[in-house]
Length: 168
Image 1: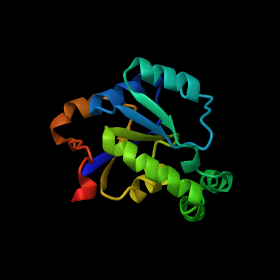
Image 2: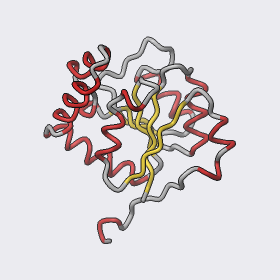
Image 3: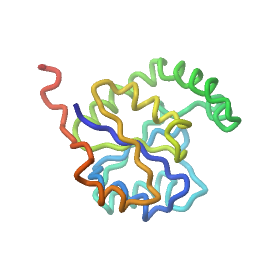
Image 4: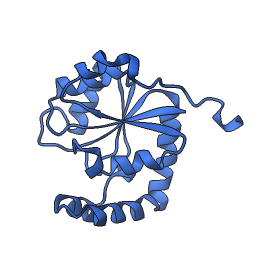
């Protein structure tokens, strides 16, 4: 089984964020925000993509896996059951299913991390996206202390490509 990482950038800065991705060996970032804009310096699509490219990490934006506005509003209001219901319905849409299929293929090629804003994966739709990625183990990262992943490198799951999985 391969691993897919998830991370939120709430409570961190771009340098710690990138250091965290590099510490665990992420080579592709899958942005699953509906709108890839941020008031937080370095996390809007253009600047984030450029920074990651300079660090040897590929950036892909999966717009159709973003949380629709009603889901974002429910999450902001703390209505997490409603948020999960809205996002689960969205995830079953044709566009989201197609994007999920592309994401699964991409994550099977190289170490991939799903990005959204929320620090806590329990309150973010990226957990639901990761859960829908069958045959992947999920590891939620916290980008405020990249050294924790270096200190615990021996305990980290190993990434395995999914080549040959279809034949199995």
